[in-house]
Image (tube, rainbow, N blue to C red; front, side, top):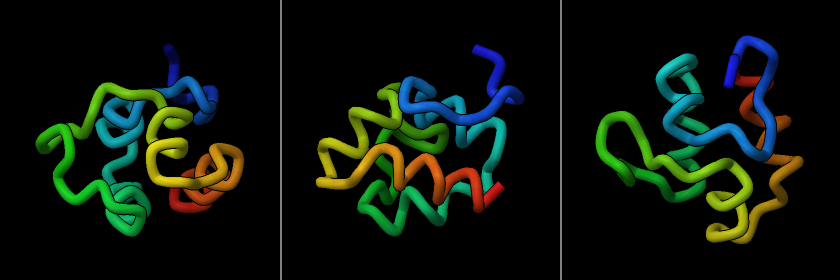
Amino acid sequence: MDIRMGITKETTVREILRAFPQTRAVFDRYGMHGCGGADGPEEPVLFFAEMHGLSAAALVAELERAI
């Protein structure tokens, strides 16, 4: 996936963190705190959002604002 085209619900947390390390603060705010190691987990944003009781669309928007 070419992350330069934007973050989607299917983009993995790892892809986002590798391309945009500044988004770590957003994920940490919602409980990631080292989950998946330094590169983050391989799960897509949709899975992360569902596991943390978040709206995937709202999380994507927040990540986009962070970059």
